[in-house]
Image 1 (cartoon, rainbow, N blue to C red):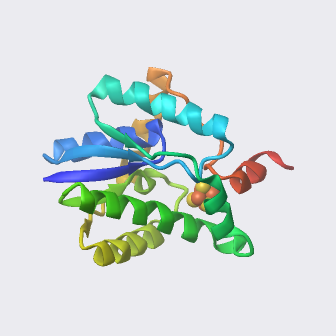
Image 2 (cartoon, rainbow, N blue to C red):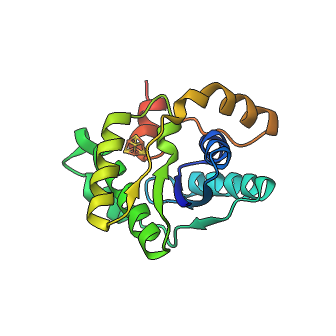
Length: 175
Ligand code: SF4
């Protein structure tokens, strides 16, 4: 079974890819960029993923362009719902790409994070999957949290200090 896995960053991909392969699924990655700010940070995360993907022989589709503007326009005046909108944008793009590429299903490394809202991600994934006519694959990848952290440190992979958008960067550093 072929699965397209939305990847937010290399460290978050470690456990999900390993877990999917153990279950016999053939995984390909999809790196979505518009929610990762600023651009220099996006490049750092992409480079880390490129190097990790090479190590584990994982094919990855890198989103073209860098449409930060359209991402921000969707959030402005709805800042309190920004993560819901962001999940929706990322999962919708993954579902459409998975459908176009004739994958059997799609999923996301967001389900690896202990800090993301799993129920919300699952319900958005299922809804966008239904409209794109492709199954959303749910698993609680956060059970491999510690393993992923240890492996990423051992490999010296770049580990980001905030979720991705400029709002999360402010939350992390503005005291
Ligand atoms: S905090 Fe993370 S999930 Fe929420 S909007 Fe920003 S990048 Fe997206």
